[in-house]
Image 1: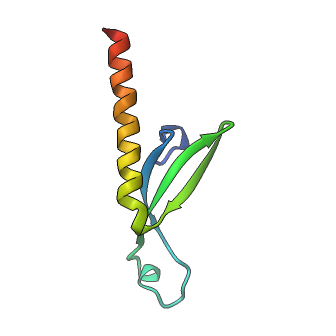
Image 2 (image 1 turned 180 degrees about the vertical axis):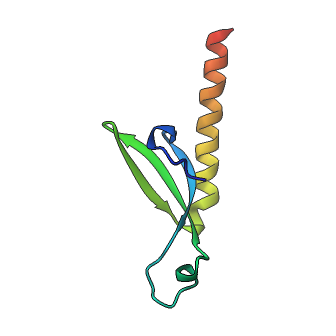
Length: 80
């Protein structure tokens, strides 16, 4: 889920966000929100989000996971 504070959003991570589409007769008007995934990055200090299509979701999430894992391993190797 998306953190409430922008400072808590990690650069290059994928977050789930509950959204309303704006259609007057949609289920989201009654509170059943849609699920959307966004890829967040910081460009020149500005936070940007990019919608991830369903067809791209697994690939993007895998890339984000690998990048996070690589960063963690790099930090561990600096300690050792």
